[in-house]
Image (cartoon, rainbow, N blue to C red; front, side):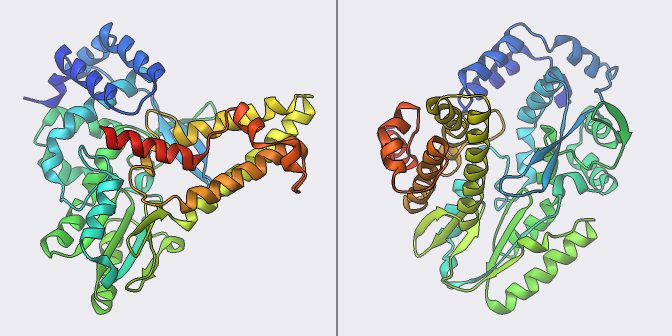
Length: 400
């Protein structure tokens, strides 16, 4: 029976709701899911989908600033109701997990960045050379014709395949209120894109798995470990494979590592048993802190706001990023905290954050800032130390 028919199964929607409740979402977002599911607001659209009488709306194209860079990331958004249905569909499609090799860690149940890092460490990577590469604009540059042909056979589900095909072959998008046409690949930001991103390069993953080579892929991030001679061969194979699949590497994110050298992957660094934030992760968050502090300071002065208002605004933004619970974006508490085993970089970020919070209060960087904006004032305005929160989280996990 087609997965599409399961969209009408109320019990499976309740299972989906329980799955969401077990995740890291805020109570506000959970209540939105509850309202949608308990009121069966999916019924009308699902009925039309099953009867093959429904056409998804034109997705909205949105550009999001990349942290620490002037570049923007393009994502596509469907209506809230359609997005819920696509999320449910992805949940049902976990049944296809058998299609993927064990060395693929993105968007899978009982997997993720922590498992990827720990599996790599267990593979004795410190004695090996490494090659790391990032795929340029992966989601939005996948050639649809190369995706669809094998997908139809592997899904073996006519209705599901047709729904996915309908989504990805439609070249119309809404941008700034105008309808335009463009090649948009599998559309980053759309729930179904996570499955398709895993699927498109599954044969590359299996090549390294079957040859028993230490390799890891997380969506568009790839790293492989081997001898110096073999690493060059792996580089050539990966680049040739990606080229044949209509993809290109991001040359700015292509790296080679020597044995024992600090390796950075998925925002983490690993060296001599120490798992920490990567230098790039620290650099990016520093840039975001600096820019936001200057912006808050300007806002505070322009609107004649008290120091407390500026600090509260700053902390609201970063407490959400560091400790919050969002639907599709893991905060530091859920991405970094479970995996790192040192507070070294957290201390660096803490010091930097305190420095720029004091800048918000005084507009300067000097020792007098400590008197004008003491630590007690920062805490009063909801500042939370990353180091303290890290150890609180670690203690809480130990008790579970």
